[in-house]
Amino acid sequence: MRKNFIAIGSFDGVHLGHRHLFESLKDLAAEHKMTPLLLVFKVPPKVVMDPSAGLLSTPEEKAVLLKKAGIRHVEFLDFKKVRDLSKEEFFNILLKKYNMGGILCGKDFAFGKERGGKAYFLKRACAENGVIFNCADFLETGGVKISSSLIRKSLKSGDIETVNDMLGAKYEVSGKIVKGRQMGRKIGFPTANIDFDKLKILPRGVYAVKAKLGRKEYMGVCNIGCRPTVEQGGLPTCEVHILDFNRDIYGRVMTAEFVAKIRAEKKFATLGELTQQINRDSILAYKLLK
Image 1 (cartoon, helix red, strand yellow):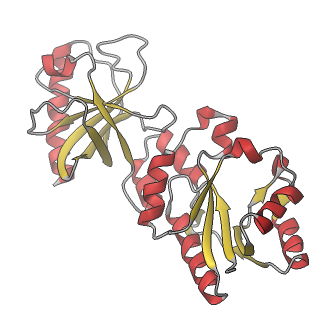
Image 2 (spheres, rainbow, N blue to C red):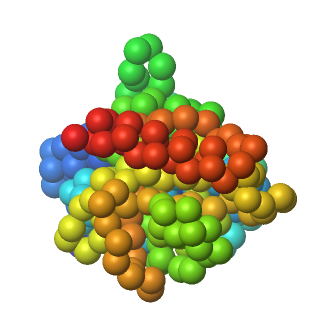
């Protein structure tokens, strides 16, 4: 039976560093006549342990991104089912269940209970079992390691430019359009309220976005926040005003692609001031998206 050359990880966001590792995996597998296999945690262990850490990509989004990255062989793992395995037990599963003939990992890779299986353990265990071991270098930009943790941090600070640079693509959020308070409609700027996965990290503020409905793409302004002008203590929402668009799209799935930040969230004294600001936001969005 053909052996698998394996890489393991959460691959949250499927950023440029991940894609660099995927290409190395495919090259190594071809060199050793093995099948490249990704073992992917559906939800990153750090998010299982602390949901407030948040996701860059939901399991559904991740599956699509991996396919776009040209990965054909993927097995999804549930961290809760393997979190208490020792490093030796986990390694044996790789050998027997996943027919491991080689493994590629990053320098900071660790697996097994309490992350006991560091790279030095893996290198020794591989040598004892005739498995090819390869440790990949990190991909950097501007002397900084590209990582999901750094992208999360940049997202939470609203630095969408850095996020998009490290992803090698525009950051997206998808969800079904649901009815909100329809306050935007009352002031002349109807918005589509996206029902997003609450573990998904969204950058607070106002952004120029490409709004995708099916195969069609529109220019839009996306507001992510708690609507301080019209509501006190509300939960964060993701609302998109599609420019030059006025159709009923409730129940449809929309994807908002973040292109550029327009401004931070702000409380206005009156609805009139808010309306004037949204008009200015829309004009700027036109310029940024053309």
